[in-house]
Amino acid sequence: MQEALTIAQSCADSAPRVHTRGVVPDNAVALVNLQTFGCQMNEYDSELVGSLLHGRGYGFTAEDHKADVILFNTCAIRETAHARIFARLGDLQHEKRQRPELVVGILGCMAQNLKEDILLKFPVVDLICGPDSYRQLPDLIDRARGLRERGAGIDLSEYETYDDIAPTRVEGVNAWIAIMRGCDNFCTFCVVPYTRGRERSRDPRGVVDETRRLADQGYKQVTLLGQNVNSYRHDAADFADLMLQVADVPGIERVRFTSPHPKDFPEKLLHAIADHPHLCKQIHLPLQAGSDRILKKMNRGYTPDEYQRLAERIREIIPGVAISTDIICGFCGETDEEYLETERIVREVEFESAFIFKYSERVGTIAAKLWPDDVPEDVKSQRVTRLVELQKQISAKKHHAMLGGTVRVLIEGESKKSAAEWRARTEANTIVVFADPTKQVGDFCNVRITETTPNTLIGVAA
Ligand code: 5AD
Ligand code: SF4
Image (tube, rainbow, N blue to C red):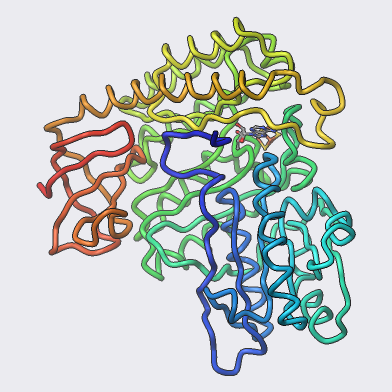
C-alpha cells in the first residue's frame, strides 16, 4: 500500500527531479548529478545549491553514471522519504566499487535529521550538508574529491536566508521563491523545526528583486514558499504586503503561495487575494485532523470549528476560491470516532483537493517522545483509503460542475499521455489537458471543458 495517497497535483512523495540547468561547460571542474526529493522548498534549495556549485566551476549532468559527484537533496518528513534514499545508497555501493573516486553527498533535511549517523552507517556517503550549511558545500565537495576527506556541514543558523544568492532555475513556467526559512510552530508530529531550524524572513527588497529578475527571464508565475507564511515579518512588512509587492512586478501574471497556518490566518491577506488580479484564488490550508482532541495533541492551535469558520470566511471573501489541504490519518491514539470527525469536516468543507498521509513517527519530535505510535498500520491504511475515496468523489463532483464552462489556463508542458496535447493549469491549480498547435509552453489560453475526471479537466481551445 502506498504511504501517501493524494488526489492533488503535486506531492512531496513524487519522483525525484534532476537539476540540469547551468549545464556542462566543457571546462567544468567536475560533473554533478543533483537529485531532489521532497517538497518545493527542497526544489528551491537545489536551485541555490546549483548556483553555489556553478560559481565554483561545477557543471551538471542528468546522467548519474557520467557524474563525478552525486548529490541527493533529501526529505525527512515521513519514514518512506528516508527509505527511498537508503535504497539509493544501497544501489550506489556497486557503482562506487567500480569508481572509487565518485563522491556521494546527502543534502537537506535527512542530513540534518540523522547527522553523522549517516556517515557511520553508510560508508558510500562522503559528505552530509544540512539546509543552513549550503555555503560550505563547495568546500566539502572539494575536500572529498581532492583529499578523500569525509565531511559534515550541519550547523543550523538563526540568520541564513541565502538572500544574496541567485538560484539557477530549473526550466518551467513557475519559479519558486523562498521568502522565509525554518519553522517555530513545533506541531508535535513534525520534524521540520529540527531539520530547518528557527523561523527567519527575507528582506522584501530581495524577494521583489528576485521576482523582477524572474520576470525578465520570462517567468509568468511565481510561488512564494515558507513553512508558515503567516508569520512572515520584515520590519513593518507582513506577508500580505509582500504578496502585493510581488504581484505588482510587471510580467508576473500569477502569484501563488504555500503554506499558511489556519491558527493565525490574516483577513488582510484574504482581501489582498480577492482584490488583486494576479494573486491566484487558491489557498492551501493544512487541516491535519478533524478531532478537537487530536488537534490539541498535535499542537495545532485551532479547533475544528475555528478551521471550518475560517474556510467559510475564505469562501465569503474570495468567491470561487479553491481550498486544498493536508491530512494525517492515524496520529497517536486516534480512535475510529476521532477519525470520523476528519471525514465529517472533509465532507462539509468540500476541499478542491487533498494530500492524505499516514502518520509516520519521526525521531526527536514531541509526539515520538510522549506517545506510542499505536494506531495499527492496517487501520491507518484503511483510513487513508476511505478518505481518498471520499475526496475523489468531492473533486469529481466539483469538476463535473465545470463541464461546458471556459477556464483560463497557463500551459506548463506536454501532457503525460500525448505530445500532441498540452498540460496546463487553471488559476485554482487544477490540471487541464487540451490540444492547440498554435500555442506554446508559457502561453495563456482559454479552454472549454468537455470532459472531467477526479484529477483532471479535459477540453478544447475556446
Ligand atoms: N507523518 C505524516 N505526515 C506528516 N506531515 C508532516 N509530518 C508528518 C508525519 N510525521 C504532513 C503534514 C504536512 C505535510 C507537508 O506533511 O500533513 O502538512
Ligand atoms: Fe511542521 Fe507544523 Fe511547522 Fe508545518 S507548521 S512545518 S507541520 S511544525
